Amino acid sequence: MAVPSEPPEKMMFQLNLRRRGISDQNVLRAMDEVPREAFVQRGDRADAYRDSALGIACGQTISQPFVVAYMTEQLHVGRDHRALEIGAGSGYQAAILSRLCKHVLTIERYRTLADSARDRLENLGYHNIEVMFGDGFDVPAGAGNFDRIIVTAAMEQIPESLLLRLEPGGILIAPVGPHQGTQTLVRVTRTDGGFGRKALVDVRFVPALPGIAREL
Ligand code: SAH
Image 1 (cartoon, helix red, strand yellow):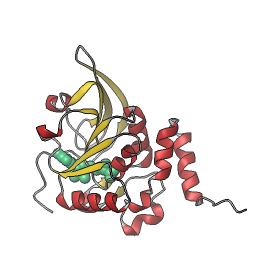
Image 2 (cartoon, rainbow, N blue to C red):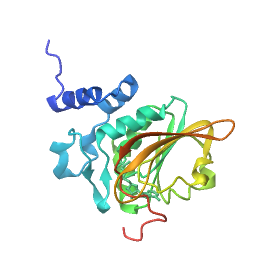
Image 3 (spheres, rainbow, N blue to C red):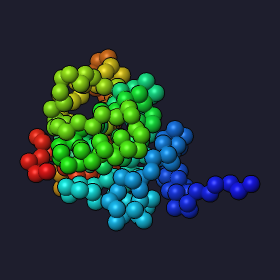
Image 4 (cartoon, rainbow, N blue to C red):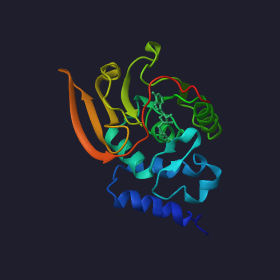
């Protein structure tokens, strides 16, 4: 009986993630299950499984797969967690998270991106993700607090108001640093006494900008 074969580029995709140090089996499985080709622009589909960031609408980017996997691994997501993402972009990172936790709220400041990410995720059958058009610097109080927060756009500093949205024991990951140039991925854990902070690796993200975008 013929074994259904995976396209070679998807095998290489997994191999590369492992080679670069991703070892969490649940993260690797999520990276295998979510079809990245459905999140990139039509003309980039042939490059969907290369380890590089790609352009999406509104001058934004879908992150490099290794960075998505690394951030997800470092977030230590649990099955019963509620997660918040700031910077929905294509919806890819939210889709990965949704395979690992109970619910994901993802916020995007471009209406066009929010609408297309929502449609895409719905069509692909991800039912535990809410895509919100809004400003991640001003998360509505009604959304409550979160076990995990992931910021996928560069912040010059992490606002205290965002840290306070973490449940006790909660973890936040964000690229922190100047908008132009290199940022450091920072992981903050909310403890009984306050917040513990750990610098992870250098990364490059598009900037987190305040307010909703005036452009579509
Ligand atoms: N996680 C995305 C890629 C993020 S690119 C993916 O998987 O495809 C960063 C995104 O953050 C951009 O779409 C940008 O518009 C958005 N962004 C920047 N500042 C924001 C803010 N204040 N609130 C919400 N989204 C923001």
